[in-house]
Image 1 (tube, helix red, strand yellow):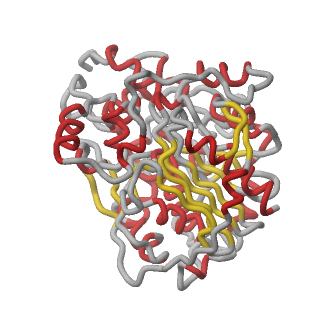
Image 2: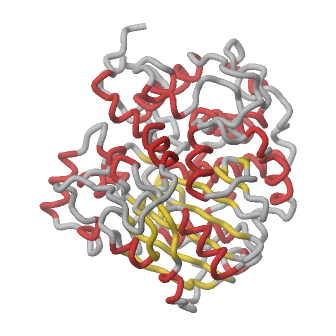
Length: 448
């Protein structure tokens, strides 16, 4: 294979979707966090509020021209723009909405803004964090008992389709649960049963469940992004973002075929977008439908969404299901509501079955969670343990709460017990700032 000239993209690959181990270790090393930390952002980084009322024609053209392979991942000024303009920079497919919109009532609780949490920025209230330019928070909504109790738009309009990043993975995990429940997928079957193209690779005999729950045992952890430009993870993302230096004709499947085994499958949680993509291939194989149609038919059309979803594609037309998906904030919230007792506020039929929650909790396996960089980051930032990961959720807590992050600070937090959903979008510079601690603190301090 032609040697890949990817070295100039080290910085891009280091920060794709979830930042680097360096940032994680720095955060973990802090035994205490001051009221206001000394974390800084570049002086030339404009406020995310620049996009609160949209952008002028001149600004839009300038940012479009500035787009390159690092734009979305570094979240500099052009990246802040591109996060809510996915279709201007990547090939895309549409996840369609149809039918009546499920209207959400308001019952505002301004005291939510007084909830305090500790992040890399220090310890402060939610209101203070939103006003802190370093947080780069762009929008947040809290749904409790089917009503919007808190909603703020700092850097986008309420109808902007914003990047979900890896929060997209829960669409994949939910569809996989449905397919297994319907007998389309046997979670104990080997991957090669559904994706024959991987039959002569290390994927072949790994159980579907171990891929779905991020414990495939392969050397594909997101932490490998900076290890080598020729590593399969680097190749996967270079193809996914259309790197002009890769040889023509390479596909995501080529990246999948070049992986190697790391540990025994099922023995360790290691966060990896390649696992999500293989799960997507399995879904497309057993249904015969493209991923965007599955989301449309099984999720989007069921929940009264107010807008379409935009799914990023590779140059070769492969779905970027691990993270390149964009939609309105309230539609991310509606998706989260499908996992709560108030699902009937948005849906005419139950989309997420009652047995989902027990199965997600049983599959989480906290005992194999904690060595991966993602789990270390979450264990530190949530300040507690006892949780694991399953069905593409980053954290399934003992109390039943569910959490999924996105690379530049996106959040999907669902608390079925308290009937609460917390969602937010961010354009964290270089993925250095996650403020996910606020989601759990809102639930703990006000609703539990």
